[in-house]
Image (cartoon, rainbow, N blue to C red; front, side, top):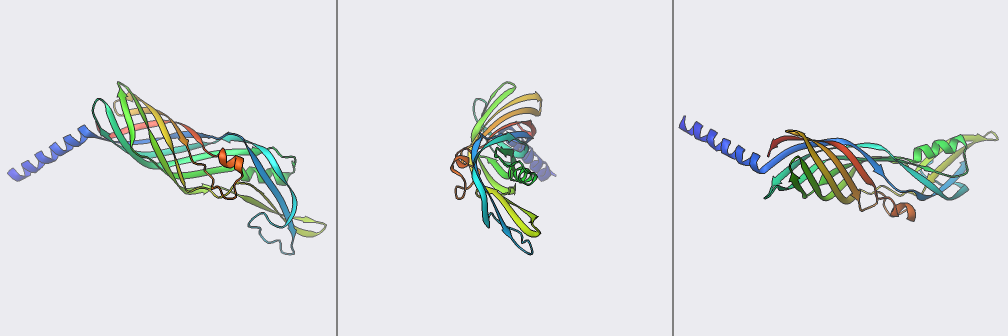
Length: 251
């Protein structure tokens, strides 16, 4: 009986020490990803075929191509993660988190062909949704009453994407089956991204905070190979997020 009481006392002391020094929390919310307009190089090709084979890329007989202005529009994405904070002196803390973050946006290329085929192709090519395993590693937090400010580096690894580089269409010209392919100058999606995160938390009730967050990537979302120069330089998203932080345990 004495050993059981001693074990309970030790566990209670360890638990008290943990909650005084560490904090466990979950975060989640919505975000919007912003990128500047850029020059988009496009190409359209076709080839004749009795069986109309599927085109994997933009190849065949060249029809037209050029560089056009592309306007971007922020899409609505989400983020969710879990975090551990370690308390330091004078209301300072250091934290690490791991979760998911989505980058979503569209772009519309202003080019002269207004045919239904081209409009559909542009709609598909210009819709990007990228899902990353996201970590805010070694972020620093300072608290002032109900407010907390947090800043630090962020790294992301691509795990899923909606990302189309070329679109194929089947048609007919003078009773001959034709396959069209339309594509633009984005290369493959980059796997690793690095950036910085800045957040402000406001405590609404004891365990619940409202979060306002800005996250900027310093590496483009595209690989440099086969990506247009202007698109590559401007492919670094700025994300603005609004969400919540819920404290599960700790200080």
